[in-house]
Length: 105
Image 1 (tube, rainbow, N blue to C red):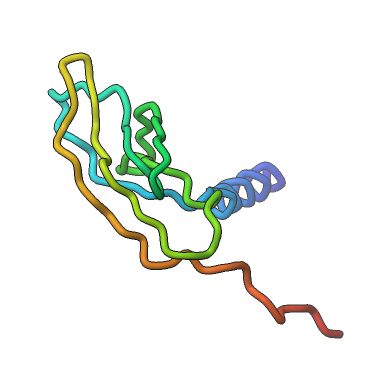
Image 2 (cartoon, one colour):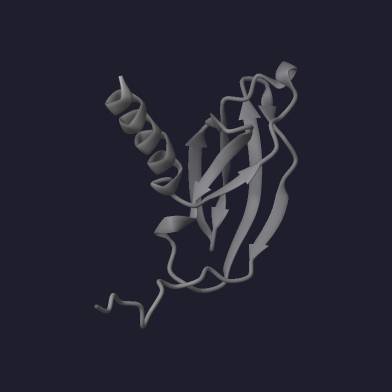
């Protein structure tokens, strides 16, 4: 039983560390029946199904972008009745991977 508790604790603590960085937003009102999110990243269109996780809506996986300034435009929710108004968003800079890090005896 003790091993099971330790294994479950390790798995639960490791799960958030494996998550990709996402551009997120607040949850829309329940009556909106959102199907997905559309928008442009640096002029390239994207469409993502509605994903709710940890009290926020996942919009875009920014882990796939290069370290630089990126422009998110035309971001809007959609459902069977149409689309919401757009919200522009500029991401000032995505940091690059760490450097000069190592292990020493």
